[in-house]
Image (cartoon, rainbow, N blue to C red; front, side, top):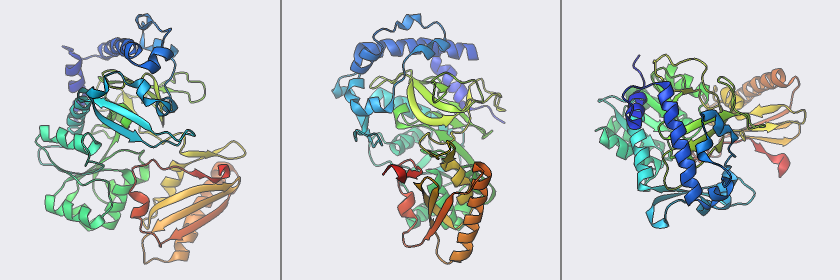
Length: 435
């Protein structure tokens, strides 16, 4: 098994003659200090938040735990207070919807240099899965300059890799035709959309597609299993978010967690309640600090994503850290009256194991009532599928909770599944008790 190409890229980026874990961490500590000092001087928000912080007093990476967090709500309330360069130097602004009570959307600013760093990461990150024979179809937003698809295409052009950016999946026929005409070998896309495409256009998918890179949302294990076993694909996953500069980490051939973009980002995993750092292997909230961002640096930004660092070294032999696959977001769960939680990922593993279910909505309507609205293919026995789904869900809920919830399962054929899967928005369990 080859070592992740990200290692040589990061070692060379940092300027090390010989890579070591200690050298990478020394570099990260230096860059954190620089990022803090830069943000204090140029960002109104960090000028206030970090006014009493002496960056030179950070002697180890563990000392970073003393710094305050940055929350998504901070960015939503006043994004311009994070801006560290004149507006004329901003090359790309991304507006993100937020579920915050203020109703304000987040705005993320990038300079040309910031975008170039992302292109550089995409170039080397994609080399983790591609070879000279690959042709790539991207099912992510790509029309706008500086969008994820646009940057990915530019990065692949630097490697001489043919890339077609079709955009978020809305037309199955167009996607299948594009795969055949371009003889695409690799699809990059949103997990549930790629699963949907493989199920609805299985003949084309199986004939051409050998590799899949899943991104923009957490990846259910059942999706990886089906694409691997039934479609014969090697399935890689990518971790990133717009606030990171799109790219955060990508899997190597071991397919057992992401190797991280350690030259540009410093990652932590913290206890969601106390904010304390967690030891490797413990699942908590992912926090990151940008090390090279110019337009809008972020210090200890709380992502809301749940993951853990791997206790074991990766079998590829890299000195880079490995983060296990993200388990979803904190908001991907609902709390019941007895303090227990139902997680969206648990419902995913059950419902997407049924090949006729293309997508679903889940909601808690009352303290003890779970509603599942499944979007399905046509031409199947309604009652049989409904009964099987209810049996599986009831068995899971009773084993997990120790009691049964009221369960309502609807099978919906009236809307085409694309209406459920053509959004890049993160999925949640809707809590109607708050309405």
